[in-house]
Amino acid sequence: MDGELWDVVDAAGRPLGITHRRGDPNFAAGWFHVVSSVCAVREDGLVLISQRAAVKDFALDWEFAAGSALTGETSREAAVRELREETGLRTSGDALVFVGRCVEAAALFDVYVAHGVDPATVQLDPDEVAASEWVTLDDVRARYRAGLFAAPWVARFDALWPALVAAVRGGEAAR
Image (cartoon, rainbow, N blue to C red; front, side, top):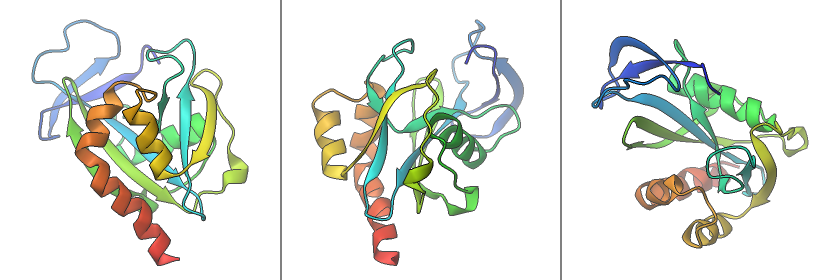
């Protein structure tokens, strides 16, 4: 959302002591903000994907719940908040499994897995999400390879796919 405030970090994630308002100019080269994403997994191993609202960039493309960390938030706190705000699903930061980080042009994009979410509590934010589906990881892979996920997800999946699969399936083994 426009007007949100971000903590600016360097490429290693170290705070630079700068706050930036989303949408303002002068986001300098070498500055980054943290973006967190969550792959929610239900008991049977299906994962939740959401379709971006028609008014957003990459309109109606698929993704996992994601958004920028706000000033003062950790990556995990942002992941928990974004999952709840966009999908209604609840988890704790301690319950998240860290999959990995992608360094993008102006963002450090962190991906987490949340096991044991209650699918009955899905309540989509219509300003953020047009639809959602519980799907297999094979379906996620087929959709992203077919260009149905928001374009930035292709590089993220290419970089993190084996770790994502291991994190999702690791929860299955624990049951």
